[in-house]
Image (cartoon, rainbow, N blue to C red; front, side):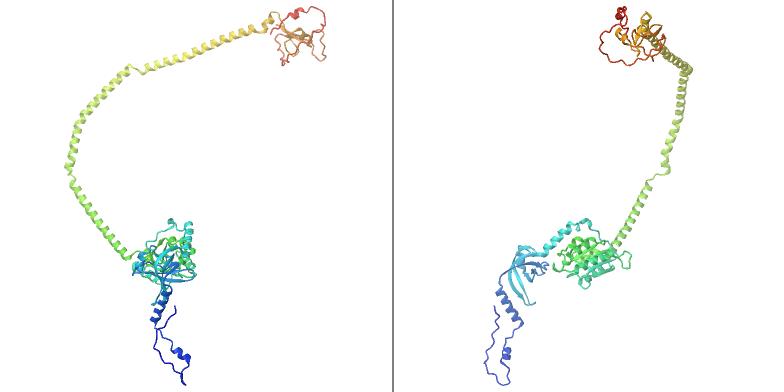
Length: 525
């Protein structure tokens, strides 16, 4: 709607006279004058009339919870612009979706102005979620990736030193954070503090923070600049965009790799950044980080004093108790006479019983000795030795008799075997007038046909052997002359027996003469 100036009193138009201003100057002089309040009210009416009811989609930024008055103040933003937003106390309690940092919502309300800041804002009447915003989506994705690498594991956390000698602080040197930390350390337990100044937001802030953490870790323990025993990385509150440097991967990795225990104190208690997961401890505020870093000196002194007093009291009570126990024991100890009376009585009783006991023992020993002497007389060792020798002699004679019997039986058996061998020997047959015929190879000749084919024959008699040549056998010039062999001449070796072959047809006899007796002669074997 066009802005309408307030009405002004009408004036009569007059022609300009010489020396008067030009008409344009008169028009400019006649422009209505606005007060600041009137203009702010006119602008407010114009915006509220033109945008009385809107639905606005954006990401919540800068939300820190309800104000002390109960109202909630934050901003709605997208990639190009940002608008302030307010939720009154009565409406905030009725909202089903409460405001949350980084949450993308669809807010319903009206546009109005705030004259005190010359700004416009949306007064929200209803709000519903529209999805996680781009910043939060990126944050969650990075958190999952770093968690998968194990940078947030609980076993990586190290304890904070009880009383560090030097404290290192990574923060902006000009903000209120470093003053709060120093003031809190001074109140609790003053310690030397090394400050590494860095930018805590904006371009290049993440690289400076990571370099500061690594720089503190690179200090030599015994160098000119003392190496801190604990680090504090701190920043004040802000929106998610302001705190984004502490969500960068370089900062998170530097915190996880730090060899010095690290306390993160970024933002307020409701703010959460990725460095909080990688640090060894998370403090809700920078002041809380200082409280975690050192104990309270006055409390330690009081505790030491209290422990010393308790120790002294305990020692005194122990001494008094031991003294009382000692006195009670002294009173309970009997006198020397009372203590020795029972001992003396037992000694006298033992003395009275000792002499009869010794006499009875000597008597029993004497009787036992007499019994042993009597047994020794009746059973002399010489007699026992003679009996043992007799038993030994009997035992020695018995094996000799058994061996002689065994030898005799075996000799008789051997003679029987020799007689049987003589009866079965072919020499006994030869002694009865028979002869054994062998060929030149020493094989027995069993038929007249085989004798006719042999070149020469050996005739074994009981008193010797002679060689003969069958009638009509060819004469071998190289053969030795026939001669007689004595009876004890060795029998020539018998060659291997040739395989049996069929008998040939009867050949013509070389000479005439009776042959029937030779044909009727059988083999001796």
